[in-house]
Length: 203
Image 1: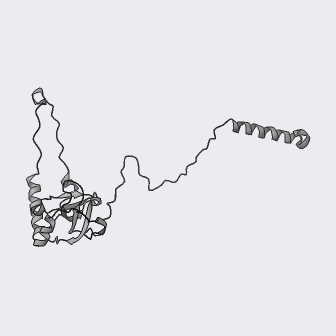
Image 2: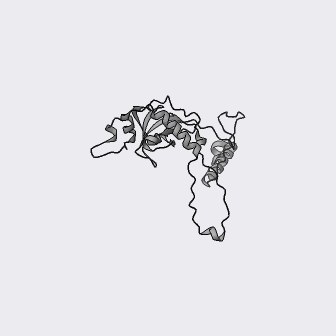
Image 3: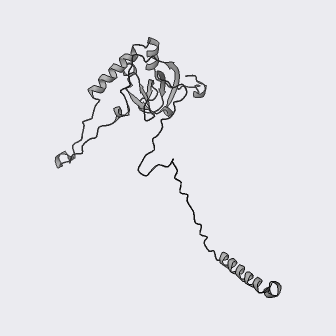
């Protein structure tokens, strides 16, 4: 029939198309070859290298000297004074320790509420404090003998005298500019009671 309608060439084309259709029905996999250009992307990071992380932008109302309310951690509910933002993006805050017992700490700004109260930081110098200040000292592992296997280790690494002196010096510079009302405000713990809604409060 193909020869009658299309001639010999038409019959060959018909046979070829039939073969293609049967191969498609058999589920033959289609191979796709990807070609890549010779140009290199400048934004790619080489293996083994870490891309420097840019510190997060400070929230609205968070400025050096602002009073923040901590929402998580050991001192949640306490009011602290914001000093500066560290290279890691965390916030450096202090109670001061002499006022409400909160020492120098690093906190995430996600777990803080910025208030409209501000403190004068002219007498405080925190330029020397960085993320390395909070690094823990590496402890050497010692082999346990039979006698000391069941003995409980009660020794705890306390705060060094150098850090205590630095905390005291920093607190003195901040506490000088605090009035009696601000000190009472910093000592008071933040909490919500009945009929108090956070979205309606002005801090």
